[in-house]
Image (tube, rainbow, N blue to C red; front, side, top):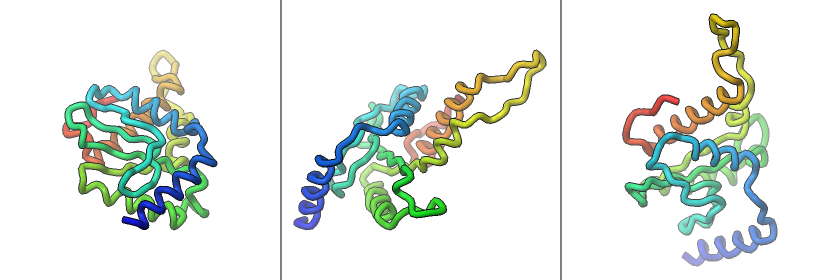
Amino acid sequence: AECLLAFIITNNNNNKKSRHPSSRLQRDVVKTLQSLEDDDLVIMGEGIRCNQTGYSIDILIGTKDNPKKRIAIKINKPHHYISNRSLKGVTLLKRRQLSHLAANNRSLISIPYWEWYELSKYQPQCTGSNGKDDDDNNNNGEKRKQRYLQECLHEASFFSSELQAV
């Protein structure tokens, strides 16, 4: 308990010095979460501290029906990796400790930055009979991001029902 308290105090002091607003990537993930057509999904906070581990959590979501059912979302930006998309040891430890909380009705979703960026990239669509693209490129990227998050939430057992079509 003393070690955890010392870690939290040290981590809080370090974060006060380097506190910065959420990244564009994080804001995009939040925007996409808000666009999901699930009335039960609630964004409970951004950039909050986990009381049990002292680690910061990028986004915390929950459900209106069951406030104890929460999922932490960590966005793994480039500084979380050493090379070849291999996570740094400190990031692996953080992920493991946060994931361990799943026994308490919480889960962790990790979003690698390159996967999110890939979802935003243009991907050619089949052209319809009228010669126009089936979907606007921007809408298509949004739909891919929505589907990605829905799959992550489904895997984390956040949704009890089948995935909704986007």
